[in-house]
Image 1 (cartoon, rainbow, N blue to C red):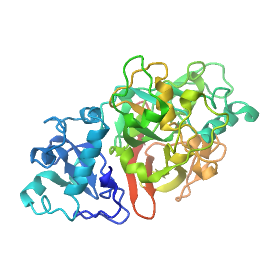
Image 2: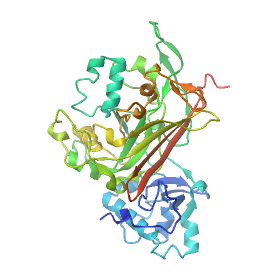
Image 3: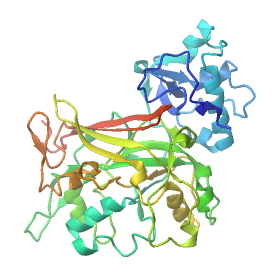
Image 4: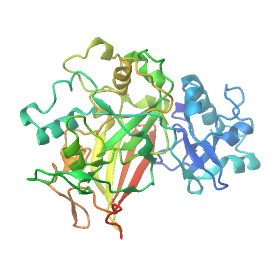
Amino acid sequence: MITANDPKRESWLEVQAKSDFPIQNIPFGVFITKDDIVTIGTRIGDYAIDLSALQMLGYLKGIELTDDVFLQDNLNDFISSGKKTWRAVRNRIADIFDKADPTLQNNAKHKEAVIFKIEEVEMQLPVYIGDYTDFYSSREHATNVGKMFRDPANALLPNWLHIPVGYHGRSSTVIPSGIHVKRPMGQTLPKGESQPIFGPSTRIDFELETAFITTDANLFGESIPVDEAEEHIFGMVLLNDWSARDIQTWEYVPLGPFLAKNFATSISPWVITLDALEPFRTVSPKQDPTPLPYLQQTGDKTFDINLEVYLQPENGQDNLICESNFKYLYWTMSQQLAHHTVNGCKINAGDLMGSGTISGTAPNSFGSLLELTWAGANPITLADGSTRTFIEDYDTITMKGYCQNDDIRIGFGEVSSMLLPSTATMK
């Protein structure tokens, strides 16, 4: 049972009313403590909790864990331990920090070793990412792009409604929130010209995405049934798939995204487990035509996750420019993982699977500036009176996500990065 999710639980740690991290969340991440120790931890309210210290002090006794599982600089070994272990650890943490449990609460020495203020720690990339796949699963986003660049009457390509389209990205440039991104250089083809030029991209964009992180899911040559896929998903993060639209336009035919996408992908540092999201399951969009049998799922396989994007100019204020929702995605995580492995592709612990840009039907729900400004034709106006068609140097893009019902709010925190000038134009 998922006892950690009890909405009546209260923690003896202070938690603000609208915190993303109540005791019912219990995410997992990696951070450096004020003593320069790298450890795996969790978060309640504005407190980071050192799980390696908690284990060494005996609070996780009885759970099948190796002695060094939380002494790693990534979550991969813990992820490999499987869903039964993840759930047991979450349940135990919830008990330890429940206000009804005095054990740690009344031990000042142990609390000093285990608990840190969130501003005292430095968050790291939560997993070692061996492989990164990015899907293209929002019907609204794919339709908008098709209208802009192909035939408006036939915006979706013939295969789109039959398979979760995806491509293999570059794991070496996946970075945690807070790491700045440099404007990339590349080839572009100016409008009306027949020969490309080389220089800094002038059309940098964000893409509002989430991503799921897998465990060791299958053997080489084996596939994962769609209704068993969630057993192999550890949790979710927010993802900003930075994109250079002018480079992308020139290079993507015939093989798809390459340099336009692989210069940076930012993710939020706390991994939110599917167990924590369980109270927010909801129905996904109706699929017509009916997918082939290996993609036909039963039950609700998506979640009601509110998503927001903010743009902050240098020395300016945050501007909310997009409000979307994870439940808008046409293809679910279960279908994405089932399709990814139907040919026998092996999936490993720590693999990252991007959702693709998440857009809704309303114009303010479009998950990229490409759509929000309709390829630059309709600039957006910020609070300071300036306008944007694409991201300018020293703009900061921040994405937030949260679920909320009458009982609890479970959030993802944020993924936030500033765009810096290219090396060629730096002063």
